[in-house]
Image (cartoon, rainbow, N blue to C red; front, side, top):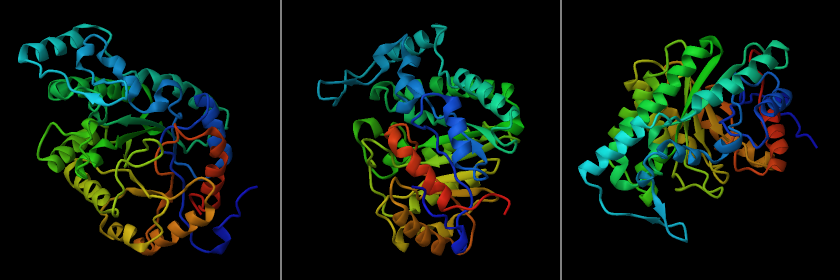
Length: 358
């Protein structure tokens, strides 16, 4: 049963943002499903991060195949196991092996090219509106460095960042800028900011906040000025749980504001998560301090089979934002979401939002 539409009952959020992954078999399935379910509500559309990308950055282990010793190791219970601290010569040898392998690639560019063919074909056929852009979601290097062993992270970081930026440059040189939107996924950074130093999230740099702001701002500036760039700020989705329950949106707002101020270009949008149980004004209150020059805000208010809870979260967010326009989203990508829950999520997203241009 479709959820009743809220547009008739007064002001509602405008637009829906798809974070990235979608539990469907192919990019074309994602494009057609989203177009049919969310008419007039999408400014950009991801390819669903299908296949090996459904598990976020796990497939990036392949980048380091020429030097497998740099990867984090685990015991039989999947606990991270630290090996001996590598010497400088061992660090140099590992980096050189990856550089000279000729096979080290993130494959974010080749995946984007393949999906864009489908996107463009559907758009040319009128099945995707001409105003909708093709969204490419990329992880910040910090997220990928979490799968690298502690002793190697600092040495490998510049190499991996350059490989990722190579992919970005290829994407920007191939896909028309007026059709392209780049999103940086910022997740492990919030574990570091919250002091959740599980082995995966232990920072190798300090001060932590400044290091994160400098890195994310550099990535934002790597996106060409005439290409949309957004941030997906995230508290994780490990087993459908956060790695830390945020007290409120304060740290999310702080990082968004700091990157907006430091980067040489403005953010096009920012996406922030909203835990399902947070229908209270206190969680949303820091949003009053959000300072985006011209960017849009999307809040992860939509949860599966919970239209009443979604409405309560919307009411709390609307009160904090005091009339400022915003859109809705899920908290995180849906790569680990059971496919049978997708229709409910899309129906709720459509029911609680207005369309662009009205």
